[in-house]
Amino acid sequence: MPVEHLSNSATPDEIAAVIARDGCVVLDRVASPEQIAKFRAEVAPYEAANSSGSDDFAGRRTKRTGALIARSATARDFVTHPSVLGAVAKVLGHATGFQLHLTQLISIGPGEPMQQIHRDQWAFDFFPFPNGYEVQCNTIWAMSDFSAENGATRVIPGSNHYADKLKFVEEQTEPAEMTAGSVLFYTGSLYHGGGANRSQQVRSGLNLTYNLAWLRQEENQYLACPQDVARTLPDPLLRLMGYARGAYALGYVGDLRDPLETLKPGAAKTQLGDLGDALARLREGSSA
Image 1 (cartoon, helix red, strand yellow):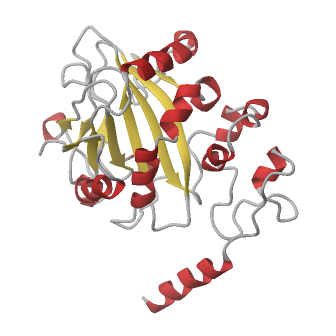
Image 2: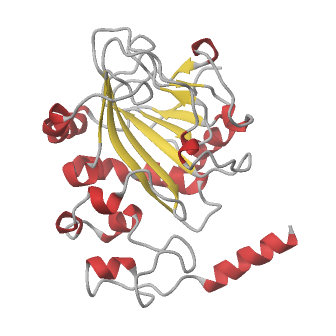
C-alpha cells in the first residue's frame, strides 16, 4: 500500500486521521525552496565537521547532525510549524503534554545500504507499549527530493497496528517518495527504516520528532542548546524543549519551582500541575 499524500492545506484532524489509520502520511510542499536553502546554509558548517555513523544502524555512509535548536533559526521555525504541532497534538492528545524529542539532519550518502526496519519507540529500552498507545509522533522534512533510488525512507503503512518486534525485508516496505519541502509524518510504532541510496547524490532529511512529556528525550535538549542561547528563545519553544512539567508533579525544580523560571527568573510561573485533570484521569482509569 503506497503512502498517502495530503495537500499542505490539510487540517490537523485530516492529518491525524490518516496517521491513526496508516501510521504515516506525507504533507506536500510545506517548506519553500528559500527556507530549505537558508536551513542548509545555517547547518552546513556543522554537517561538514561531522563524521559518518560508527555502526550499521546509524549508517557508515550517513551523517547525523543534531543540536539544531542551537544551530539553526530556521530549524526552530520547522519545529514549531502550526500544521506539525497541530497534528502532533491530535496524535499524542491522550497524554497531558508532549515535548521535542529529537532534532537531526540525516544525510544518506551514495552506497549506503537499507537500514534495519525498526520502530522508533524501541529507543525506550524496548518497553512493550500497548498496541494503539502512541508515545511518539515524528516528522522527516525532505531537504532534497526523496526517491526510491536515493534512499527515501522505507515504511510499512498500517504496521502501527502490528505486533511488536517483527522482522521485515525491503520487498515488504514502501518508499516514502516526496519532493523537497514535503514532510513525512509517522508514529513511533510504525515499522520503517532509511532506504538504500543507489544514486550518486546525498539524500537529506530533517528529522524532528516529538514524544510524550513524561518520557525521556532521545536528544538531551538542555545540553544540546546552551543556556545562553536558550535564554534568547521564545517561551513556547522552551516549553516544547522540556522547560515545563510533563504531567502533575513531574519535572519541577527545587521547591516546586517552574522549570522555565530557573532559566528566566521572573518568567510566567505555573503551579505544581493541574490536580483536577490528574484526578479526572485517575477516575477514568478506575472506571475502565
